[in-house]
Length: 409
Length: 145
Image (cartoon, rainbow over all chains, first blue to last red; front, side):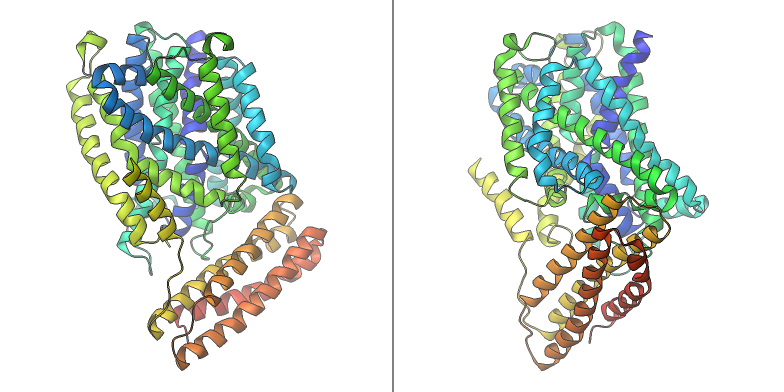
């Protein structure tokens, strides 16, 4: 039973991490604008995140140390600092977007302006991090996040021609009026949303929090290979719903309210209730993960005591940094910056930072000094290297495409 | 580090700018994009009105959906108005689109008020007018003149 419960870590990371505000927005936006023409990016992203999350979880289980701790030791403080700065910046943007996402979900449930919810949301995130046990936290938001399955149910209820849908996904073509640069820009955004760096920091640090050892590697792999594909399948369901319902009538997705329209059409008020709980749980779970990740990365780099597995007074600098990050994130969200635009920028900048995040993990996962006989297999290395090349291409293309397309306009 | 930060800032600022129109063709493209954006808002509101008629949407969700659609349409209109028409032909394009935008925004305002007040029947009655103005905006987007 204990091992079964451990699988929930993967499900939490998949739903609160894979399907977060970035995925909700990116998948619905892409489905509404390109139909299923970018669906192929989702499995590419899922495979990539599975690959590197498995590596980072294995590194943590074998070494009992966080990724940033090892990156600094193995690659030196200068390389690790570049990694830290890029990751911390992207993580901060993502955390701010997640906090705003929770507030947007509450706004849709209550009609109270999301700006009024932001301070309360930030406070609640901090309280949960401060008070709730790590495993209780993961179970609660992991299970509540499963409400997003309502998007898959809605898709089934909409009764699509499955063969046609699969044909559109497997034979991508540009819709009328869309250019190749815009198509590629949104492909990168989708890829960045799928491979958001914090998912790996949280997953590996979570493995240390839960005191994983080499005996837990089977559980770790089950988490990765069940949890992340589940998140990917939900992402595709969100995209397909938008492709079926919003794409034909030209509704663009600029708000969270539009993301839920396929559920409204297929399942009515009960469906909306599930979708709202799912929005809340996924974004709140991701806000917890990103806030914790901000503390994990900085504390591991500087060698501070970190984690929820020790009393807060023993990891005071870690908790202080998490608290300050949350306050700063809430402050940025309160500037009335469009939360959906912020989300779009955060996933594109994630794409820019991807090689810096994933290259050190590949290096450490191959180092026998840390890993003993648990280094990468040849297949994992071949795939990891191929992905690093892809990550570099994506990283180089992201900003020029952002400028050329005016952020996809 | 400073260069990277400046690059990020430049990217964000540059992508948020509305460029001027030097030619009538460019102006037409901007007009078509505006029509497309407002048509999206109109279709969103129409979807909400239909869902309200079918009792498939909660009041709070509907209220936000329609209010956000109106805000988007207003933003698109303001952005378009900030672009100077470069010649007489562009003036005509502007006037035609302005008329459509005015109709669309009137309907979106009515839809927002009906949704806010919980008057689902009034909102449902707007489904057809919203559909018509949406079709006109689509037609304009295809052939802006």
